[in-house]
Image (cartoon, rainbow, N blue to C red; front, top):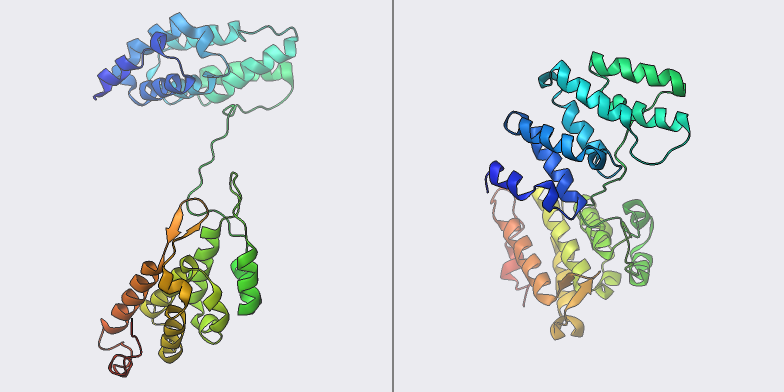
Length: 296
């Protein structure tokens, strides 16, 4: 869909959801030379609606980023619409001044509008900035961990496994997640492999998602040229894969979407062994393969 067809599809009179009107103003602002006439048409016909709390910020931003393209007559029209506002019932004159000052605060980088801002500032006796009437927050990644990396390092492995078993996934914005906890296991395994390898017996109680992340961390450690005790590593592998829970291969879900089974562990072990042999100048001793230490 090209910009013209998009703008046609987003005609204000056909819109229901406010978000699409905001998108429309964004499109116009970014493509001012193409949609200048469309802007003045919409502003003239729908100015009361566009200066409402739902769209006022986007409207003013659309104007602000194109101030250098708006002539004095256009600025006068905008000034008139602002000074006729607010378009809601407000009796307090200072509140009216504040509303107008907020509008002009967005545009005050332009000398013409800065004079209007200063005029209303005298009436309100305050500096103001106009911010969007909403806050957008986007989360990326697994979220926070119920145990920080430092907390995990300060626990011995037996204590760490017990704390891990007690963790409960909570629904909610930015709530702690088991996925984030598993990620911390991977980071620790990369930065400090001995933390897990010197006392791996308690780790055998962990479910496959955590074990997969730990092995992935060992792989990252070897890639980073961190030393690994391969004897202990293979002992750990073999102790884990002979357990009934591994052989039964029951899928395990972390949080509400992160499911793994024993196959994940096998793939991570295989990937680690590949990394451990791919560079002949930095490979583990071939005796581990010849001695059949890995037997799955």
